[in-house]
Length: 577
Image (tube, rainbow, N blue to C red; front, side, top):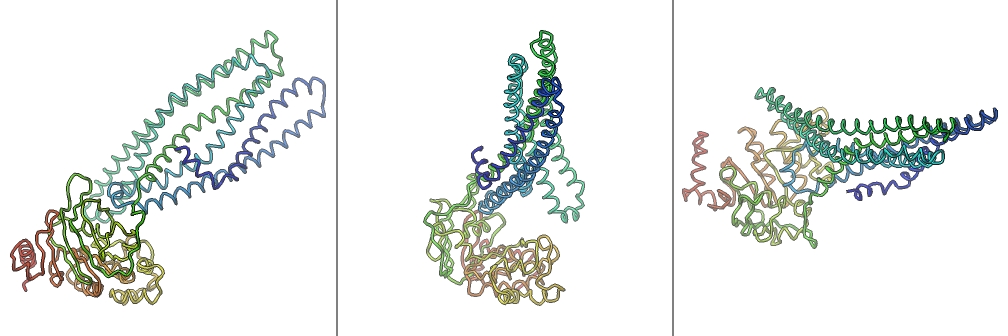
């Protein structure tokens, strides 16, 4: 872990070197005062060297002025290094998140992921700045002060420093407990973030069901966990600081007793004893700095550990010799496809389907049968393992093709439309960012949304709010259709694209979808069976298997599952042919 952390310093090694040099100079200047104090008491005052006293004071003042600028440099540029490292980690983490498979997001809440990018990396940035600085300055001050104390009185120095092994032992003893406690605290903080993200995203559902109290209770549960974890963390930290502070207090007691005895025995004079006391404080200060640094070290290492947990998740993989899918005709074939999400229950079993170029295949059946899973397997959102069949596009196994080239040629329209924060233009252009203005407008016209857009004050530059909250369901759906029109893929997946719409809106959307399907190989998932009667072929998916397959007329004539579903739906909706 340390090696990976240090790698983030490499782009800033020159500035880091200057930062460390400035820190070292700060430490050296800190040693000037006790040296001058000793000379002042033992030499300058005793020998009435008045001009030397003044010039010594002026020299110390000048060095302190220099130290002021050095501290500014360390504080400013040191933090800049930390922020730049945080920025690089954030970019690396975000880029890695974009490459992770769907399965990762199935098992990780958005709020928890956000905490890795924000609060965790903030702590890492603080460690990145203060870590080397504190370690170098404190270590240098300890070494310099120890050396200088030895030059004043070696035996008194050994007596005082006899406490150091005890201080080291206490530090190591409590460090493990602190690390675990702060890890738990960080995890509970992620739980709170996840609860907030979920509640804010679903605020309209909460208000619709008047479940404000339920959400408050759920948040309170996470908050209680955070408080309990914080108590454990601060308990460990309090034990650590109180114990180490006691030991540093013992230093002063030893100096008082041993120094007094040494002066009584005339083993040290007043000037040397005064310089010794000042120098010991120069030693105790860095020790306390290192002790206080332990909290920041625990926070930073915990944050970096959680950063690495995500970075170590394997990204989506493709064959080393994967080829680009080009000149797509759109012929699709599922051959003996079986699939499971978590190795506990098979979702699909021995699926065999073939869709000819430009044809439409509809998948119907009860919820949970595996229809959407089939749609997710085609763009390789979930990787089909060897031995579980194969999926072919134009006769080529999708596992032998690059992920981007496969997905570039597949357009998806889902029931739950996702629109990004931004303008109408931003969301349509997402289908092909390099498209021209004319192409964008044509896509909107083909999706029957252009006329509505032109009624808006800002037209295509109208902000739509988070997830398109300012648009109706039908308008959001038509925007997503325009996005696919602009992408212009050879293969189309319609996953219950109209099931959440009212009948009037569905008719309007269906016209746009019919236009979208022209000339494209289309895989349709539909619960409203009236929308897929004209499909070239219909497959009934039941319990992860294809139980029936044929045209609408053929399946109705068989009087099987499809016939029953169709009859039941039309009876319930009081619709007759």
